[in-house]
Image (cartoon, rainbow, N blue to C red; front, side, top):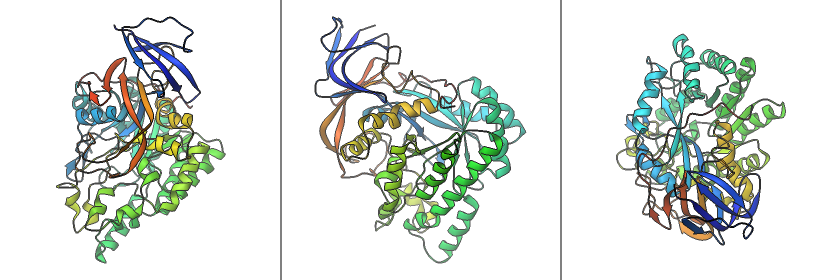
Amino acid sequence: MTRTLITGGLVVTAAEEMPADVLIENGTVLALGLPGRHQWAAERVFDASGKYVIPGGVDVHTHMELPFGGTYASDTFETGTRAAAWGGTTTIVDFAVQSKDASLRAGLDAWHAKADGRCAIDYGLHMIMSDVNESTLREMPGLIGEGVTSFKLFMAYPGVFYSDDGQILRAMQQAAETGALIMMHAENGPAIDVLVEQALARGETDPRHHGEVRKALLEAEATHRAVQLARVAGAPLYVVHVSAREALAELAAARDLGLPVFGETCPQYLFLSTDNLAEPDFEGAKYVCSTPLRPKDHQAALWRGLRTDDLQVVSTDHCPFCFKGQKELGRGDFSKIPNGLPGVENRMDLLHQAVVDGHLTRRRWIDIACAAPARMFGLYPRKGTLAPGSDADVVIYDPHATHTLSAATHHMNVDYSAYEGRTVTGRVETVLSRGEVVLDRGHYLGRPGHGAFLPRSTCQYL
């Protein structure tokens, strides 16, 4: 294997930042050393002077090829992982889906078939449980043994993914016994369905009503309920895509009691708002996702939660649907708009912009985007940091370059950008995945099949 040396950069991890050279061999980080203090030879040398050298991003919430609302997410594992690499993300954890009346095994096998041989970067899988019963509960330990150690449940979407409180409790009890982590979509689905029906009966059909019926209090209520069920079961809990300050307050209260309760938010809740949902001429449909975008005054609470570690992770919930032909399914009925936004390519840059804007420190940027998600889902220190023995997933990042986010230039397989026209400071220059150069100075060098499946250990916060 070729030895690679990255010289002259500022190495930034969640734990420290220091000028250091990085030596890579056989796909892993061999050593870090102070510049000028060593005599390392390498066949390939990258000069990172004036740049950051950071771990590759770890996005633990993506939905490639997800069936939803009569259509499919528009990114395949091939296109979606390529786009992730362009944005400095070198690991994703996607969601295998159990179909109603089917086994967990059948769902997991189906997602392995979608991903195997097609990914440009490494990937893991969570398991969505759509049908909690005696049989599927018995399957959980076997999946954990294969490195699928997290299981997602939904308090939303009755008739599709929804689990009632009894099913949730039983899955949590099994998680408590086996060391699995329950991931929760916390919204009161039955109550939301009533509000959807009432809004449509009043003729309120525009995209903005999607956010108005999925009320913040119903996210907070479900979050509170999930926390209490987890307490009863003695299980850890990870609440996905927290969007409302009231829901965050429930997590903070639980953590103040010392409970193993964790939370994730997403860039869309930090940078977008109900103003986008209200854009005219059905443009608001581009921003329909669940949990929904909130009024701008929720953003300050989310940033504060990230600084205080009441929120540990920023993932994308990348679930793209094209505006034409997919989002348009909901013209005249907001409830038929496929729920999801594209974002896997934009996360690292948007969070660096948050550093520039003073919301986060550099180390916290790397923590919430790389280290914490890797720890949360059993991948650290192989992923999420730069240390001897870690996978050589390395990004050379130019903190001074500016660029404008646009559908005209992004690499996600979707016909719009949720951040169209937004200029950000900071840009990926070079990306290595296990020592292989995937991207260098605007040239994509990756390939389908380089990415390997990652069996994961259990949550490392417990």
